Image 1: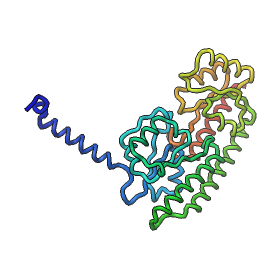
Image 2: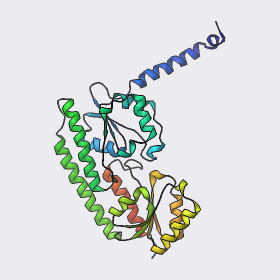
Image 3: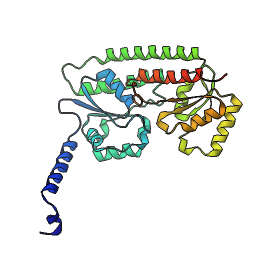
Image 4: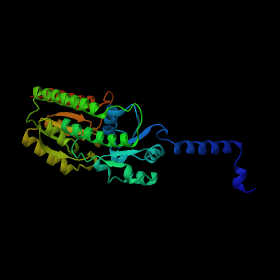
Length: 293
């Protein structure tokens, strides 16, 4: 008996058995055999899936919505879901992410199961959300055809209802923004929120990237641009990191400061797209109301 064998007492053997058992169980994670498993590349895709077909698919979302999508590490449960799911729905920007590519490779996910949803703009914009919902519905239609089961709902009816809800929520958001004086108001913002804020009616006079990439010189340029334009708000993106830099810029300019979320479920009580839109609109309206004349 060598020294390694002698080192393994009964407790160590039990521990090893527990680890091996957990590994086997984890390797089998994913959708049960009688369910259709679908991996959602983000909570945006996840909530659309739930709105359309939550009763006949097992949905697995890849990354925590409050973090930058490029900064999360794949867990064994993610790899198992990628391996076992019948469809993997991703955003175009996820194609080049190392963590996603490595996860797909490790899982051995067949290419035909990967669907890139080529909806390029900000999914918080109502018209973009409608297009994304229609694209997800098309992928689900293919799954439905390939997995004939009883009790699968009519996708066209649910898609039409979602399109109606999205249009209504967008119109209400525009009314709130108009009343609050967003139209034409000059702002500085994180680049990840620029498209959404332009849809909201603001005039984006300058953008910036993640806080850690902002040099002193870059901040000085933003301040100069903000003073020249008479900036009303500085708007940060929750998923881009610490918003305190944006807050300090807003303070220097005497402007309002808001932090928006680019993904559902990143903050409490935003479990749906419309709840997230409402959260963002409320943050903008509150910031406008608190601007000192």
